[in-house]
Image (cartoon, rainbow, N blue to C red; front, top):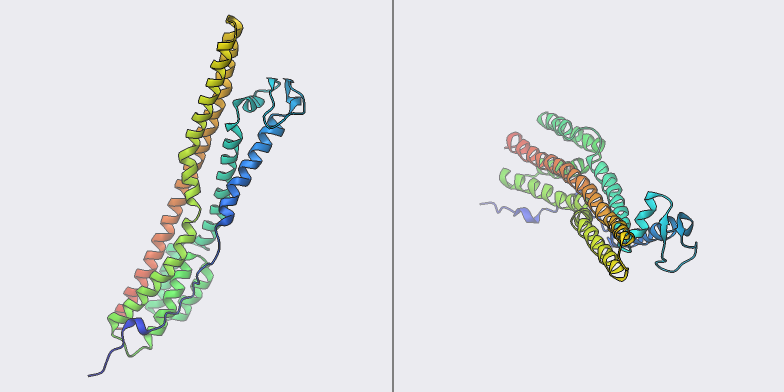
Length: 286
């Protein structure tokens, strides 16, 4: 009786190579954004020329009073405001980065149309035409399908393995290619989900600090209408933190959900492509 070689002895032919890219830039970006947030808060919003009381010079957090425009009240919101501005800029940075990455992963045209074309070519036993469709698609679904098709083509001429073993070899190749594609799609989404969670908390923290400052100033005042006016103004300034935090959080949540929906669509296309290859081979090459 002839001895059958196990599937593991067949060397995979994967068109998708592991992407060796560090993620250090992803951790540097938030720091840079917070620094930019401080520059905007201190030197743009907090410029002395924008206030009735306050010179153009000052230290890390110079006193300012009497903003000439409502937008400059953001400076009076306190030291948490530049962190919130930096958080918002970080969200924008990763939204742009994810948008470009996922747009590239989508490839050209509809994934459903692409899978149907590959199914048509495989039904006609034209693997080369199916590979050409993968080159045209240029997305994650095309990359996974291409890796599986190379294995598919190799298994057609393999006389040592059973049909079941061949199907398992194709499935394994698709799984390996998928394992290389999916991490790149989900990369850096954790930053958006984190911003969505902590931005509101940062805003509330800044508001609490501002109100503590306002009530402390009220306790030092002799009282009267002027004190009440100053307290109201202080609370109004502190609430800028809450507004910035809630706005940033909502912004991050919207885009996080949008990106996860797009990734789910790509993942579905990848799963469909793997099913197409295994079912096609099982039915045509028994």
